[in-house]
Length: 136
Length: 214
Image 1: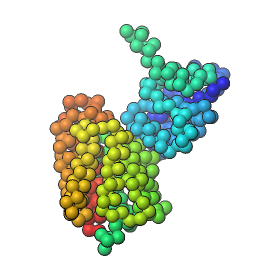
Image 2 (image 1 turned 120 degrees about the horizontal axis):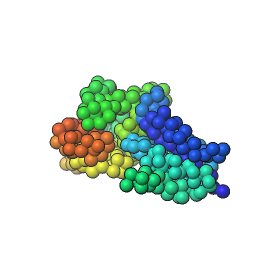
Image 3 (image 1 turned 90 degrees about the vertical axis):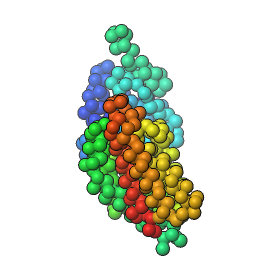
Image 4 (image 1 turned 135 degrees about the vertical axis):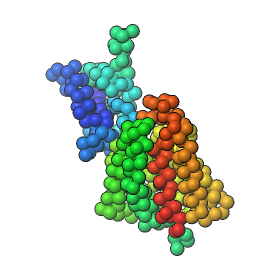
Protein backbone atom coordinates (compact mmCIF):
# COMPACT_ATOMS: atom_id res chain seq x y z
CA UNK A 1 0.00 0.00 0.00
CA UNK A 2 1.47 3.39 -0.93
CA UNK A 3 2.25 5.73 1.91
CA UNK A 4 2.09 9.22 0.47
CA UNK A 5 3.29 11.97 2.81
CA UNK A 6 1.81 15.44 3.06
CA UNK A 7 3.53 18.77 3.66
CA UNK A 8 1.71 21.91 4.79
CA UNK A 9 3.38 25.20 3.88
CA UNK A 10 2.04 28.38 5.40
CA UNK A 11 3.14 31.87 6.38
CA UNK A 12 1.86 31.11 9.85
CA UNK A 13 2.83 28.23 12.13
CA UNK A 14 -0.42 28.46 14.17
CA UNK A 15 -2.44 28.43 10.93
CA UNK A 16 -0.60 25.33 9.68
CA UNK A 17 -0.91 23.54 13.02
CA UNK A 18 -4.62 24.30 13.24
CA UNK A 19 -5.23 23.15 9.67
CA UNK A 20 -3.43 19.89 10.41
CA UNK A 21 -5.41 19.42 13.64
CA UNK A 22 -8.64 19.97 11.74
CA UNK A 23 -7.60 17.49 9.06
CA UNK A 24 -6.46 14.85 11.57
CA UNK A 25 -9.98 14.77 12.97
CA UNK A 26 -10.77 12.87 9.77
CA UNK A 27 -8.28 10.16 10.73
CA UNK A 28 -9.19 8.71 14.10
CA UNK A 29 -6.81 5.85 14.84
CA UNK A 30 -5.10 6.07 11.46
CA UNK A 31 -1.53 7.08 10.76
CA UNK A 32 -0.39 9.59 8.19
CA UNK A 33 2.81 11.58 7.88
CA UNK A 34 2.06 15.31 7.73
CA UNK A 35 5.07 17.64 7.97
CA UNK A 36 4.77 21.39 8.52
CA UNK A 37 7.01 24.14 7.14
CA UNK A 38 5.51 27.42 8.31
CA UNK A 39 6.56 30.79 9.64
CA UNK A 40 10.00 32.32 9.97
CA UNK A 41 12.56 30.93 12.38
CA UNK A 42 12.07 33.96 14.64
CA UNK A 43 8.38 33.18 15.05
CA UNK A 44 7.06 35.65 12.49
CA UNK A 45 4.97 35.29 9.35
CA UNK A 46 6.80 33.96 6.32
CA UNK A 47 8.00 30.93 4.41
CA UNK A 48 11.44 29.29 4.13
CA UNK A 49 12.40 27.28 1.04
CA UNK A 50 15.12 25.37 2.88
CA UNK A 51 12.70 24.36 5.65
CA UNK A 52 10.20 23.24 2.99
CA UNK A 53 12.77 21.02 1.27
CA UNK A 54 13.64 19.50 4.66
CA UNK A 55 9.94 18.86 5.37
CA UNK A 56 9.45 17.21 1.97
CA UNK A 57 12.41 14.91 2.54
CA UNK A 58 11.07 14.00 5.98
CA UNK A 59 7.58 13.29 4.61
CA UNK A 60 8.79 11.09 1.75
CA UNK A 61 8.78 7.36 2.44
CA UNK A 62 9.54 6.57 -1.19
CA UNK A 63 5.96 6.88 -2.43
CA UNK A 64 6.03 10.62 -2.84
CA UNK A 65 4.70 13.79 -1.25
CA UNK A 66 1.81 16.15 -1.90
CA UNK A 67 2.49 19.72 -0.79
CA UNK A 68 -0.36 22.05 0.16
CA UNK A 69 0.34 25.74 0.68
CA UNK A 70 -1.34 29.01 1.40
CA UNK A 71 -0.52 31.92 -0.90
CA UNK A 72 2.12 34.18 -2.35
CA UNK A 73 5.59 33.42 -1.04
CA UNK A 74 4.41 29.98 0.10
CA UNK A 75 4.02 29.04 -3.56
CA UNK A 76 7.30 30.62 -4.67
CA UNK A 77 9.19 29.11 -1.73
CA UNK A 78 7.73 25.65 -2.41
CA UNK A 79 8.83 25.88 -6.05
CA UNK A 80 12.27 27.03 -4.92
CA UNK A 81 12.47 24.14 -2.44
CA UNK A 82 12.20 21.64 -5.31
CA UNK A 83 15.64 22.79 -6.49
CA UNK A 84 17.24 21.61 -3.25
CA UNK A 85 15.89 18.04 -3.43
CA UNK A 86 17.60 15.01 -4.87
CA UNK A 87 16.37 14.28 -8.40
CA UNK A 88 14.57 11.08 -7.40
CA UNK A 89 12.75 12.78 -4.52
CA UNK A 90 11.81 15.78 -6.67
CA UNK A 91 10.21 13.47 -9.23
CA UNK A 92 7.86 12.20 -6.52
CA UNK A 93 6.63 15.61 -5.31
CA UNK A 94 3.36 17.24 -6.34
CA UNK A 95 2.74 20.92 -5.52
CA UNK A 96 -1.02 21.17 -5.21
CA UNK A 97 -2.88 24.33 -6.32
CA UNK A 98 -5.76 23.36 -4.00
CA UNK A 99 -6.97 25.74 -1.27
CA UNK A 100 -5.02 24.88 1.88
CA UNK A 101 -7.71 23.87 4.39
CA UNK A 102 -10.24 22.25 2.06
CA UNK A 103 -7.52 20.60 0.00
CA UNK A 104 -5.76 19.21 3.04
CA UNK A 105 -8.93 17.63 4.40
CA UNK A 106 -9.65 15.96 1.08
CA UNK A 107 -6.06 14.79 0.75
CA UNK A 108 -5.64 13.26 4.21
CA UNK A 109 -8.58 10.91 3.84
CA UNK A 110 -7.40 9.30 0.62
CA UNK A 111 -3.71 9.43 1.60
CA UNK A 112 -4.43 7.57 4.84
CA UNK A 113 -6.41 5.10 2.77
CA UNK A 114 -3.33 4.25 0.76
CA UNK A 115 -4.04 6.10 -2.49
CA UNK A 116 -1.11 6.92 -4.80
CA UNK A 117 0.09 10.52 -4.89
CA UNK A 118 -1.71 11.51 -8.12
CA UNK A 119 -4.99 10.39 -6.57
CA UNK A 120 -4.21 12.30 -3.37
CA UNK A 121 -3.44 15.44 -5.38
CA UNK A 122 -6.62 15.03 -7.42
CA UNK A 123 -8.69 14.67 -4.24
CA UNK A 124 -7.14 17.83 -2.81
CA UNK A 125 -8.22 19.73 -5.90
CA UNK A 126 -11.81 18.57 -5.34
CA UNK A 127 -11.74 20.05 -1.84
CA UNK A 128 -13.82 23.09 -2.76
CA UNK A 129 -16.59 21.07 -4.44
CA UNK A 130 -18.77 20.41 -1.37
CA UNK A 131 -18.77 24.09 -0.38
CA UNK A 132 -19.43 25.21 -3.93
CA UNK A 133 -22.29 22.72 -4.29
CA UNK A 134 -23.82 23.78 -0.99
CA UNK A 135 -23.68 27.50 -1.65
CA UNK A 136 -24.70 27.12 -5.26
CA UNK B 1 43.40 47.38 -10.42
CA UNK B 2 40.51 44.99 -10.57
CA UNK B 3 39.66 45.90 -14.16
CA UNK B 4 42.44 43.66 -15.38
CA UNK B 5 41.76 40.94 -12.84
CA UNK B 6 37.97 40.99 -13.04
CA UNK B 7 35.46 41.09 -10.22
CA UNK B 8 36.88 38.94 -7.47
CA UNK B 9 35.48 37.65 -4.19
CA UNK B 10 36.28 40.78 -2.12
CA UNK B 11 34.68 43.02 -4.77
CA UNK B 12 31.45 41.00 -4.83
CA UNK B 13 31.46 40.80 -1.03
CA UNK B 14 31.69 44.60 -0.91
CA UNK B 15 28.69 44.78 -3.26
CA UNK B 16 26.60 42.51 -1.01
CA UNK B 17 27.63 44.38 2.15
CA UNK B 18 26.79 47.73 0.56
CA UNK B 19 23.39 46.40 -0.58
CA UNK B 20 22.70 45.19 2.96
CA UNK B 21 23.72 48.60 4.38
CA UNK B 22 21.50 50.39 1.87
CA UNK B 23 18.53 48.10 2.59
CA UNK B 24 18.92 48.82 6.31
CA UNK B 25 19.09 52.55 5.59
CA UNK B 26 15.94 52.43 3.41
CA UNK B 27 14.12 49.82 5.49
CA UNK B 28 11.33 52.14 6.64
CA UNK B 29 10.88 53.63 3.18
CA UNK B 30 10.52 50.14 1.66
CA UNK B 31 8.02 49.13 4.32
CA UNK B 32 6.03 52.34 3.81
CA UNK B 33 5.83 51.65 0.08
CA UNK B 34 4.73 48.08 0.81
CA UNK B 35 2.13 49.17 3.35
CA UNK B 36 0.44 51.20 0.62
CA UNK B 37 -0.04 48.26 -1.76
CA UNK B 38 1.16 45.09 -0.04
CA UNK B 39 1.61 43.52 3.35
CA UNK B 40 3.99 46.09 4.81
CA UNK B 41 6.89 43.70 5.23
CA UNK B 42 9.32 44.33 2.35
CA UNK B 43 11.72 46.53 4.29
CA UNK B 44 11.79 44.33 7.38
CA UNK B 45 12.00 41.13 5.33
CA UNK B 46 14.83 42.32 3.10
CA UNK B 47 16.69 43.72 6.10
CA UNK B 48 16.37 40.42 7.97
CA UNK B 49 17.57 38.51 4.91
CA UNK B 50 20.49 40.75 4.01
CA UNK B 51 21.60 41.00 7.64
CA UNK B 52 21.68 37.21 7.75
CA UNK B 53 23.61 37.16 4.46
CA UNK B 54 26.23 39.54 5.88
CA UNK B 55 26.51 37.51 9.07
CA UNK B 56 27.07 34.38 6.99
CA UNK B 57 29.80 36.14 4.99
CA UNK B 58 31.61 36.89 8.21
CA UNK B 59 31.10 33.50 9.85
CA UNK B 60 31.68 31.36 6.76
CA UNK B 61 33.78 33.37 4.28
CA UNK B 62 33.12 31.94 0.79
CA UNK B 63 36.12 30.79 -1.22
CA UNK B 64 35.22 32.22 -4.62
CA UNK B 65 32.71 34.45 -6.47
CA UNK B 66 30.29 31.63 -7.35
CA UNK B 67 30.31 30.27 -3.79
CA UNK B 68 29.75 33.77 -2.41
CA UNK B 69 26.62 34.49 -4.44
CA UNK B 70 25.31 30.96 -3.84
CA UNK B 71 25.64 31.48 -0.10
CA UNK B 72 23.81 34.81 -0.34
CA UNK B 73 21.03 33.18 -2.39
CA UNK B 74 20.59 30.26 0.01
CA UNK B 75 20.46 32.64 2.96
CA UNK B 76 17.79 34.78 1.32
CA UNK B 77 15.48 31.88 0.32
CA UNK B 78 15.58 30.77 3.95
CA UNK B 79 15.56 33.98 5.97
CA UNK B 80 13.53 36.64 4.14
CA UNK B 81 10.11 35.06 4.69
CA UNK B 82 8.17 36.93 2.01
CA UNK B 83 8.09 36.54 -1.76
CA UNK B 84 11.27 38.60 -2.09
CA UNK B 85 13.08 35.62 -0.48
CA UNK B 86 12.59 33.15 -3.32
CA UNK B 87 12.83 35.97 -5.87
CA UNK B 88 16.08 37.63 -4.71
CA UNK B 89 17.36 34.22 -3.59
CA UNK B 90 16.83 32.75 -7.05
CA UNK B 91 18.42 35.85 -8.55
CA UNK B 92 21.67 35.29 -6.63
CA UNK B 93 21.60 31.50 -7.10
CA UNK B 94 21.31 31.93 -10.89
CA UNK B 95 24.06 34.56 -10.85
CA UNK B 96 26.23 32.09 -8.96
CA UNK B 97 25.49 29.44 -11.56
CA UNK B 98 26.78 31.74 -14.29
CA UNK B 99 30.04 32.49 -12.48
CA UNK B 100 33.10 30.32 -12.02
CA UNK B 101 35.62 30.17 -9.19
CA UNK B 102 37.65 32.74 -11.14
CA UNK B 103 37.17 36.50 -10.96
CA UNK B 104 34.47 37.60 -13.40
CA UNK B 105 35.31 39.84 -16.33
CA UNK B 106 32.80 42.50 -17.37
CA UNK B 107 30.99 40.33 -19.89
CA UNK B 108 30.78 37.40 -17.47
CA UNK B 109 29.31 39.67 -14.81
CA UNK B 110 26.73 41.00 -17.29
CA UNK B 111 25.83 37.45 -18.33
CA UNK B 112 25.46 36.49 -14.68
CA UNK B 113 23.20 39.46 -14.00
CA UNK B 114 21.02 38.42 -16.95
CA UNK B 115 20.95 34.83 -15.68
CA UNK B 116 19.67 36.30 -12.41
CA UNK B 117 17.01 38.26 -14.31
CA UNK B 118 15.95 35.09 -16.15
CA UNK B 119 15.72 33.28 -12.82
CA UNK B 120 13.50 35.97 -11.31
CA UNK B 121 11.31 35.93 -14.43
CA UNK B 122 10.90 32.14 -14.27
CA UNK B 123 10.29 32.11 -10.52
CA UNK B 124 7.77 34.94 -10.37
CA UNK B 125 6.23 34.38 -13.81
CA UNK B 126 5.92 38.16 -14.09
CA UNK B 127 6.38 40.23 -17.22
CA UNK B 128 7.68 43.76 -17.64
CA UNK B 129 4.88 46.18 -16.76
CA UNK B 130 3.41 43.97 -14.03
CA UNK B 131 4.69 46.41 -11.36
CA UNK B 132 7.42 44.17 -9.92
CA UNK B 133 11.19 44.14 -9.39
CA UNK B 134 11.51 43.08 -13.03
CA UNK B 135 10.55 46.59 -14.08
CA UNK B 136 13.86 47.80 -12.62
CA UNK B 137 16.00 44.71 -13.25
CA UNK B 138 15.19 44.12 -16.92
CA UNK B 139 16.07 47.65 -18.11
CA UNK B 140 19.21 47.54 -15.95
CA UNK B 141 20.41 44.36 -17.69
CA UNK B 142 19.59 45.84 -21.10
CA UNK B 143 21.50 49.04 -20.31
CA UNK B 144 24.50 47.13 -18.96
CA UNK B 145 24.69 44.94 -22.06
CA UNK B 146 24.29 47.91 -24.40
CA UNK B 147 26.99 49.94 -22.69
CA UNK B 148 29.48 47.06 -22.62
CA UNK B 149 28.74 46.23 -26.27
CA UNK B 150 29.42 49.90 -27.08
CA UNK B 151 32.83 49.46 -25.51
CA UNK B 152 32.25 51.43 -22.33
CA UNK B 153 34.20 50.49 -19.21
CA UNK B 154 32.40 48.64 -16.41
CA UNK B 155 32.01 51.75 -14.25
CA UNK B 156 30.15 53.70 -16.93
CA UNK B 157 28.13 50.62 -17.87
CA UNK B 158 27.03 50.02 -14.27
CA UNK B 159 26.16 53.69 -13.90
CA UNK B 160 23.94 53.41 -16.99
CA UNK B 161 22.38 50.23 -15.58
CA UNK B 162 21.62 51.89 -12.23
CA UNK B 163 20.07 54.88 -14.00
CA UNK B 164 17.90 52.52 -16.07
CA UNK B 165 16.84 50.73 -12.87
CA UNK B 166 15.83 54.02 -11.22
CA UNK B 167 13.84 55.04 -14.30
CA UNK B 168 12.18 51.62 -14.33
CA UNK B 169 11.40 51.99 -10.64
CA UNK B 170 9.84 55.43 -11.19
CA UNK B 171 7.83 54.08 -14.11
CA UNK B 172 6.09 51.57 -11.82
CA UNK B 173 4.12 54.37 -10.13
CA UNK B 174 1.18 54.54 -12.58
CA UNK B 175 1.10 50.79 -13.22
CA UNK B 176 -1.61 48.44 -11.96
CA UNK B 177 -0.05 45.49 -10.11
CA UNK B 178 -0.60 42.10 -11.68
CA UNK B 179 1.55 39.98 -9.35
CA UNK B 180 1.91 39.46 -5.64
CA UNK B 181 -0.12 40.82 -2.76
CA UNK B 182 -0.52 44.17 -4.54
CA UNK B 183 -2.52 42.50 -7.31
CA UNK B 184 -5.37 41.95 -4.84
CA UNK B 185 -5.82 45.73 -4.87
CA UNK B 186 -6.39 45.93 -8.64
CA UNK B 187 -6.72 49.51 -9.87
CA UNK B 188 -6.05 50.87 -6.38
CA UNK B 189 -2.41 49.77 -6.74
CA UNK B 190 -1.89 52.51 -9.34
CA UNK B 191 -0.26 55.70 -8.06
CA UNK B 192 2.20 53.91 -5.80
CA UNK B 193 5.85 53.02 -6.44
CA UNK B 194 6.59 49.31 -6.36
CA UNK B 195 8.68 48.28 -3.32
CA UNK B 196 10.44 45.43 -5.16
CA UNK B 197 11.51 47.70 -8.01
CA UNK B 198 12.71 50.16 -5.36
CA UNK B 199 14.95 47.63 -3.61
CA UNK B 200 16.24 46.44 -7.00
CA UNK B 201 17.29 50.00 -7.85
CA UNK B 202 19.24 49.99 -4.55
CA UNK B 203 20.97 46.77 -5.65
CA UNK B 204 22.21 48.47 -8.82
CA UNK B 205 23.21 51.61 -6.90
CA UNK B 206 25.24 49.37 -4.57
CA UNK B 207 26.97 47.87 -7.61
CA UNK B 208 27.95 51.35 -8.81
CA UNK B 209 29.27 52.23 -5.35
CA UNK B 210 31.40 49.10 -5.02
CA UNK B 211 32.13 47.60 -8.43
CA UNK B 212 32.29 50.60 -10.76
CA UNK B 213 35.65 51.79 -9.48
CA UNK B 214 37.15 48.34 -9.74
